[in-house]
View 1 (tube, rainbow, N blue to C red):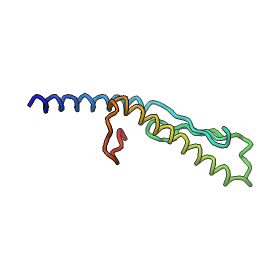
View 2: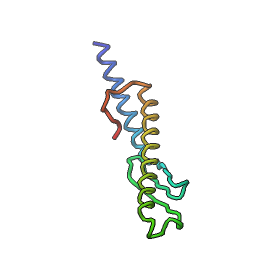
View 3: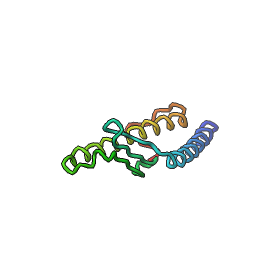
View 4: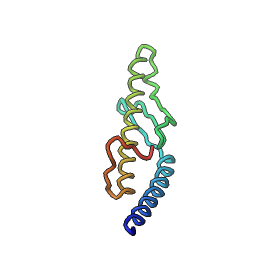
Length: 107
């Protein structure tokens, strides 16, 4: 019975640590770039876009498709960095504990 109680206590501690980590991650901002820095996108820890900067040289109406592609690429770069950062933080909290496939925490 002690083992079960100890496991429940550890699970509660892990849950509290994950909630704290989630709050920290929500406050962080990650920036992705594309086009050699001509487009930058900043997202928060939830993956919501917070800012975008576009080099004025890209504001040519004839090149709008390139600009659209660069915006998507910059967002994807920021999202990949966020995912890697979240995984790293999760690993710290879980002590390297592998979570089952398909289980995406904290979001």
